[in-house]
Length: 335
Length: 252
Image: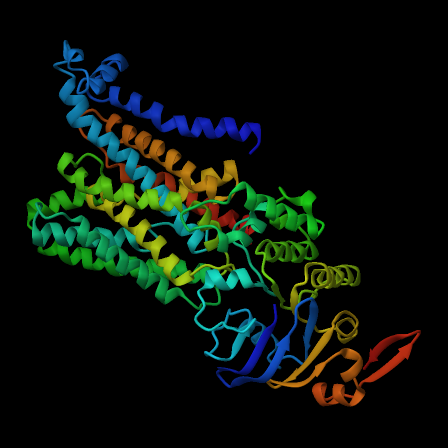
């Protein structure tokens, strides 16, 4: 890494931290950063609580879970995206294209509508996300033009699960439907500590596993024949990456709905800054993704004071034009 | 290390490879020649374990290769493919480093020792100065060398190269074959290579294998087996072998 890149990587690592502190203080109620610090430390040092009675519940019960979710969801989606891009040897792939998002959305909705809110939707979300991604990989294999085939198969499988999702919505009560609808648009405002206590560990396991495999991802981005001759047990390791990425992504979808395109933009920005070596791309994607989603969520809850715009709308509005630009340029860069 | 093939069969659609008995010795370059579709690449892929072979048909130093896990195999055999596509533009050094995959646990990253081995491999093929260059900036000749460096980083005793000289100009072709010869002579590797150019194959190999329609037609030292009648049998066209100044030329 050059000196410039080293400075840049430090900035990327500090970005989510600074964004986190700032985001705790902004919102409908403005809380000065010093009060934020004291509130955060108050569970450890009780004497700090004095004079914070108004702020404490806002910081600890409302904003902290939401920001933690934004950080972890951003990191999970970005790391999963970077890993799936390496695995499918295709820098344009993301969890949306591979059908993971729609599979998980269908699975979670199915669980919420038929098993109720008290049953954790993560299980069914994970199950159907795995089915979706395996279907996409199965139907797009052995093609002459793997990139086009993967994108097309992804669209078809996503459409299939969207149709199933509509079917579930058809059977949902109007009250549940309204909740589902808002949640599916991608929303970080819904969870309490109970939802997070299931989803955050799943995200952490998936993301940590992928970060540990960061160098292996380079080898997995070689053609299957090459990877095999380099000593990779390709079938097992491919499944492991898909398992970890789907675990993290479906855990995000279960609590936050479809937050699209983060997994595409963030790894790309990192590759533009630091090159394609996954030893750097994957950890830095975690940091940048965490900060990126946090800022997007600040925007979602800060733009209007009386209502919130779902964050998934923002990430898609930023992500889709970005994707089109990349698609246009990709021939020159990668082929 | 020596490679021994015993009654190896591989069937794919309407093509069938059958090799009764074959040995490749260490510190020797063995070249496989023959017309298109003779099964040269298939044989290489069987030996390189890209294609799986039946039990009791392929042995390395007496050890049956069938069922050996990829990570163990990769320490014995390195395979340099003919066709090769790359989705991401890795730096040359990072690319060569992937040759260490068999020695690095799945949840781990390369050590300084691994990086040193990768750089030594690059040094050996003469591209140390390109270590931090992006792979896509290299010429096709340089890319072949980088692929060979990656195979060297694998530290295997057996090296398999599929058509390493295709699309290379005469200068790069000669340089590459000199390198291949050095690998056998200096590093005592068992080198197995497919070639199209018969002159080059005869000049650079210790042993030549002629293949046709999925079988072995002849095998031996070029001086012993290379005759006009053999060439006609294998390629089905008339060829002449002309000797001049102590060198041998094959003319169609």
